[in-house]
Length: 116
Length: 117
Image (tube, each protein chain N blue to C red):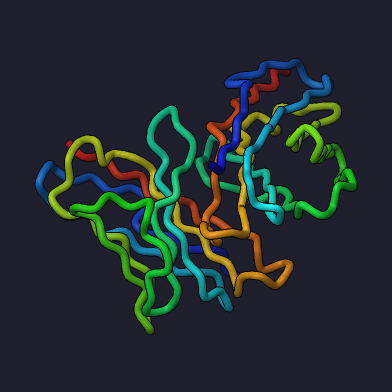
């Protein structure tokens, strides 16, 4: 079965706090990709990052960082020094390379609210 | 570089009418995917198409829904005889060829919000 779990439905922080969004996935495929997308209040989906299953290096992009741990099937996303503009719904997604090649399996999303 | 285009952005239909949602992929992308986002839920895969071919429609309801991606023109998601439960945001995504590194990423359009009265 292919599944993505984002256990945190909503998170509220105050500006400049760090926040981590959790993502746990399940797949039997040995090769897969993991993604994070952002959905701001305007509604569009913005691609943030793609990681393949063979690359467990953590990645940092400005205030964003991602921690991929195959041993715990997790792909967590941290925003450092959060800003009001980070307020959005964040989706984690899985793309297995097996029989369901092509489709993304999404978690239910985490609503992040950053207060000024 | 134009992104994925979807129109209309908002669509209101009465029960029993037909809804046609259009998606133009990014330039150079030959793969199109449709997803549905119901209120309070994540996005669910519906269908995956290449030009003139349906590759995977396992996520699409068996009745009333159909999709196409013709040789020329946009991809169309068609919902016949809409019901209130069809009210949702419908997102289209596109990607270039699969299995080639960067090509794995799906880029999404702004979505079509369908409201069935």
